[in-house]
Length: 490
Image (cartoon, rainbow, N blue to C red):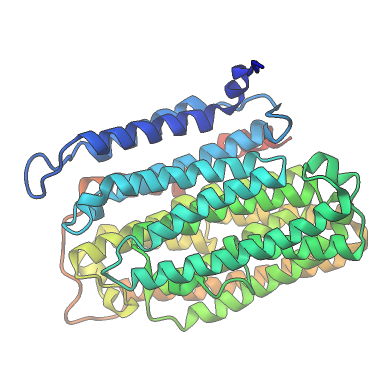
């Protein structure tokens, strides 16, 4: 029997198709080109090639597409899904650009092709996550993103406890995936389907469905680093290569946050009161506990780990609103978080490469004396993360608060509780300003007789920082960016 396959379905999967094409090209280039360390044949054109391919991928997919369903309803696309994929690809491009200096090191240069293949593979998995309309496809996308990510975490296996970080990451990922599958099995057992659209009509607030929702949320809470699923974060961020830590902190977190938002609003719409209460408790714990722990950190990468846990709470605050404005605020927050956080990690990576892996906060004492430009960029990035105007981070926090407040007006029964959560988040914003300013104080005010030496940044580092700085300054004041996301969301 000859089966007729409708290949036109792939036209609705242009982001995944272009990424797979890039994956094949990178694999063939890595396979058939020679590599000789320390010579002109060190493939210095490899990074620009991958960057150009990713840039082409972004331009091809930047325009919102019409809503469509394919492959028996398992895969869906819509304008807001297209926007999220573009944001994730944009962040990945910045990571690839700034990774060049690290990848030219003797112990990593011969693995450059592997790095690109793993990064693109994780991006493909994240795309399937956000486009899934079935728990089976969602789980496959999640694992396609998680397994290469664990390899990336252990990429520097002979330095900075990278192997230990990779082991902790993959073991925790296995347990969280098991818990998530267990929750999905409860949902499947009570509804008889794995399709989101079919499941929503059969979901009730039964004990089995509540347990299934809690277990599913727990599994994704690990990916987003929400309290109390955050214990792996600091050790993994500290041990992983700084470039990978930056990628893990924004791209992986952003994809998981949007996927969780979509599934809560679609599948668990009949149980909105239950998941809103659960989400609010987790948000308060994440923001508060992470802020308190961040104050006491002495390692800059561990400091940024607790910062990312706190930022995850603010990201999920937008979801509480359960509205189109909430989805818009979520996507906008992720975009701003990408440029601000990657600016910080790009500087940390540059300092590491030129100063024997220096990551202690007190090592940055007097950093302004020797590297004023990097100090300035680090400062505005930290100000953006803290929500200080006029930088973009202030606008992203404002819209997240507004989305939650709108949810309080819609859900009058929970209005007071949501307003209380917003108030707690505002108070914690002040706390976060304090510990972000500790880094600024170290760079500009604290005296150091032996500050970090002056060094010249790699061209790719400068390019990545220029993109991030432009985003931090412009994304907040150029209204087109928010309008582009909001138009897609509605």
